[in-house]
Amino acid sequence: MSNTNLSQSKPDNAPTHKINWGRLEEAERFAEMTKLFRQGNIQRDDFRRFRLQHGAYGSRMTDDYSMIRLKLPAGEVYPEQLEKIADLSDQFSIGSAHVSTRQNFQLHWVALEDVSEVLRGLAEVGITTREACGNSVRSIMCSPLAGVCPDEVFDPTPYAVAATKFLLRNPMSQSLPRKFKINFTCCEKHGMARMVDIGLIPQFAEINGKQQRGFKVFLGGGLGAQSYVGHQLEEFTPEEELLYTIVATIRIFDRLGNRENMARARMRYLVNEMGWEKFQNLVLKERTMLKMVLSLLIKLEVDTTPNVPRKISITSEMSSIPQGYSRWLKSNTVKQKQEGFSSVFLTLEAGDITSNQLRAIAEMAREFAADGQIRNGFTQDIVFRWVRNEDLPRLYAKLLEVGLANPGALTMASVVGCSGTTSCNLALTNSHRLAKEVQRKLIELKIDEDDDLRNSTIKISGCPNSCGQHEIATIGFFGGGGRMGKDMYPLYTMLLGGRSDQNTMLGHTCTKVPAKRVIPTILKIVEIFKGEKRPGEKLDQWIDRIIQGNGGPKVKSVNDIKDLLQSTIAPPLKEQDEDFYADYGSDGSYHTKTGRGECAA
Figure (cartoon, rainbow, N blue to C red):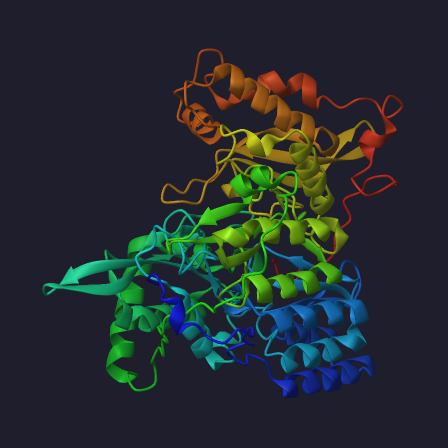
């Protein structure tokens, strides 16, 4: 998107949603199916498949409540949609919503009989939950900075939206061997193109003397109990080949994916077991066949009309700038490629946001976001784009009033944590609460102001399944259980050195850390780093150097870090510290009880 002449701006009133993704008839169908299930006329497994296809995930250890996952293509959300989500949360959920790492909102603990009412309310404002769960093509993601990123070559958002239009409710997307994820990103720095089934990064190539749009396409990546980094399909994929490539990949997965063993059903296992070259050849041959026989049926309708920002009335300047503004400005804002505008990232605690805060964000989007919307991000955050630089102090003051002005959004202080035992059947630990505790401590210590730590990340999962993306974190944790004699305690395995940029790397296992020792362990690693770092070196760079075997003077390997942490992570006897044996948010004895998994975040 180029610099915009504001004389061409849209009217002052904020736009409503552009695309109606919702279907009222699906809400009615859900109500009918729920009634039949309660009457015993539908088997539990059949109803389970149905509700997952419609975005209703079972809550921990019960069929009576659901987590409802909204499908938000490219993470785009409009003010009236935020207000509707807030109202539905107050009426049917717990008065708050959750932003996941997949750019969606989730509403937890909705009574099964109320799910259809929530689906109806969402459809009224153009939102769907269709295929947000289950063995389908999930919500297609796109970097929250797409269209405004200084490093992008063109905005991939229209392509993410067009791909969603083609695949949503498409028969080929309904019954895959396992869930299927597609990510568009603006550049190498702002996304996870190599860590999903299909990842796409915009690029130009010169063909016959002309610059042509296209993509780097990566296939077969993914996070989980066993993670893999994706492979680039070819040097350059022209934009006219994009949909054929996506459809060809889905069709190969649909035919050859493992339908017998859910634990090995994701496409990354198929690629690994078959071998990349064979899988690559199958996709390219399938694409050629599709172009020959289905050229009239497969078409990507891309709307690349520039998004002209609205002209917003400027109110009087503030008499004084609130305390903390400069700290927030440094850690929560990014200058856009459009002169005079910034994007603002909100620091949420493990993705949680109250209904009243959602309403406040809706009002702020109308007042400050010149594109009239917000975008959910990749790290449980919310992003205002197209904010005029002169409006940043007033936006900060408004955020401060509703408890959303925490600093650290783009630093190590913004900690990712999956829902854990608060709602997930597979969770072993309360990763959700731990992430909040870690974030509060790091903000209290002003970690966000330390430039040596700015580029590093902390991500926490409640089990090995990577919903918290622990394997691509500078410091990552996944939950389990430990034992001292007959007594159990919550425990995390710590990984170091993960990243998801052009040098994508999975984290290296370091050691096991008790839940109540995670914060001291993080601080100890920072302390070790400060004593070992080279001039100008950042924490993530130092850890990478250690992993590559180029450490020193004292810390030469990951094992050396493990040895230095032994006194920090040693478990006490229960009579010495009873709280150590309880998980965060729990007063009772720790146990590792889990239920049947349905679908990951």
